[in-house]
Length: 62
Image (cartoon, rainbow, N blue to C red):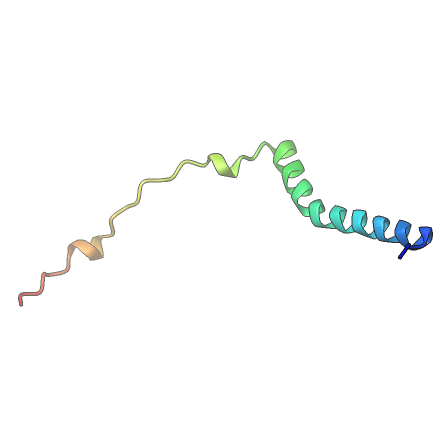
């Protein structure tokens, strides 16, 4: 079964448009990282602080 050229062209156009719309937020995110110089994946973890509340508890005797 042969598909008409107009239908085939419309399917290809819609597929390309869908891919663009899918990739656009990702491209904008990396463009923002490039222009602002942010690199969230390179953030160093801060050492976790021990709260005083956890050191003041008394152990439970069984």
